[in-house]
Image 1 (cartoon, rainbow, N blue to C red):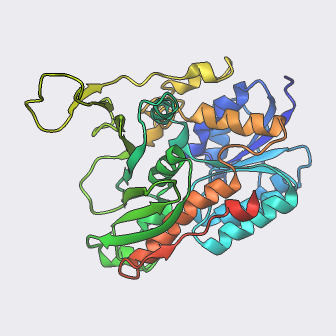
Image 2 (cartoon, rainbow, N blue to C red):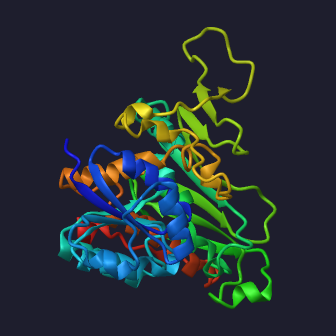
Length: 388
């Protein structure tokens, strides 16, 4: 492998966590950074001794030496900036959500298809060590037939930047939706969703959204009946931060821990031996459980960036939770960077690609539409049909 890729990273709040990963990746020869806050741009550039600092988004688009752009920018900018990146002839990775309307999802996918460039949704939830563990449980038949999936994302967004204020919960629900759809390897066909709780008036105004919490039941495309339950809260809910998923199967179950510093639980079904001459004295099968230490998966990464699955606090003043819970969202950040970079090098679409990311995003958009219409059933488009 040769260091031949030039990457631009835009957005240096949470985005700064990715800088040392790109700088150490064996395929990346150059990293350019940009933030609209010039003071932040200078401070971050100096901290990492980076000379390549752009002065505008347009400067990056016009720079023909830059191969790819990683967007870590505010939600309202994602759709337009992604399309602009494709129109400039560059590959694009974008933090979630991909967009907040079905129309914008379609426009992004059309632009990506026309450009013939890579799109990657930088969804942390499907590269956590927890997800990798549950995925291997499925592969090794420890789960058996999936019977139900659950996802949840609780986070209080008070005092965050203004564009977060009053955001419909399901417009930023991919951290809870993506792992359940990815584990079932499918998409959501339809949704019934209900808003819950009461939100103060000034939070309603920006998005005309009255709900601090939304909870949905998704019908999944599957060979047997299968549903997923997803809850997302943003305001007025006394629950500590967590992004979680549970997968319930006939043979086994994986449940995310209640608190971030606890360990997840694995349950195992132990059916009565019907061939035994000794009758069962109890009701139901025996179910055992174990609190597990989910292993880190540095073995899946190039040695140069493997250490970044572990806790790395690059700015001691950072308050973003991804900086203090180990390696960025449970070790996911180096896996995301590696998949994006390797997909460009190998000239293939990454996982998740544009259509998969659009499916995960559309599920939340349609869920909020359902909540605003009293829980009416909403059909969810499947973008993989048209774009793969």
